[in-house]
Image (cartoon, rainbow, N blue to C red):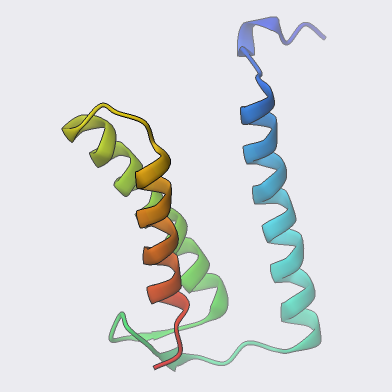
Length: 92
């Protein structure tokens, strides 16, 4: 199978490996400690999986906005995304 057209880089591979590992950890957590809904910083009841989805979606928008507004290195956008994910997962 020829995958040369996909332009895989080590960064792309790392991204997908981290996403796969995150999903594996979330699966193990769901089996070992069943999820309960709680109201956090978002203001509505969410489960662990919901908060992961919202934090990943927010990170995508943060990175896209960063590229649109500054066009510079994504290091700071990644930092903002980590702050966003921490706020979403924080227990209030």
